[in-house]
Image (cartoon, rainbow, N blue to C red; front, side, top):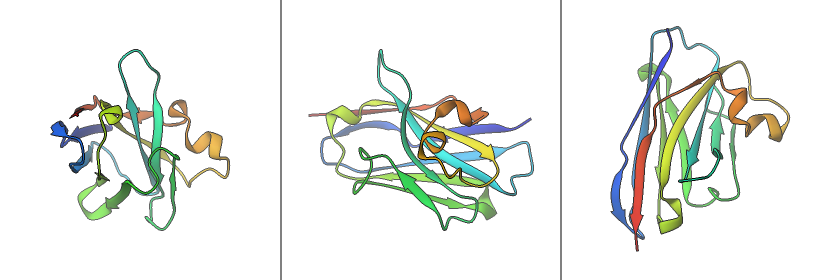
Length: 129
């Protein structure tokens, strides 16, 4: 059974950086695309970024452009989210998600949490001002 496990969250100050990791296990991960979402208290899932299996294609939400970078290491079955210049409004639980197949042509499908059958338990990121 496919499992995704996030790590790397924590309590940081505004302006700091964090690198989140997502480790995948329990399956063969050829041709899987991956994504990062977050959920702030009382809110729904917010799309941040997605990356194709090869890593050559990425797509970011406006909120993530310029500060967040998604990457992957297929040899390690891992996906990462580098977050720089963090702000208090970045405080949320961060989730990685995965789906089989190429990146959809539709940006709506790329950013829809329900299009990713697998997701982890999340890692808390808290940014103090």
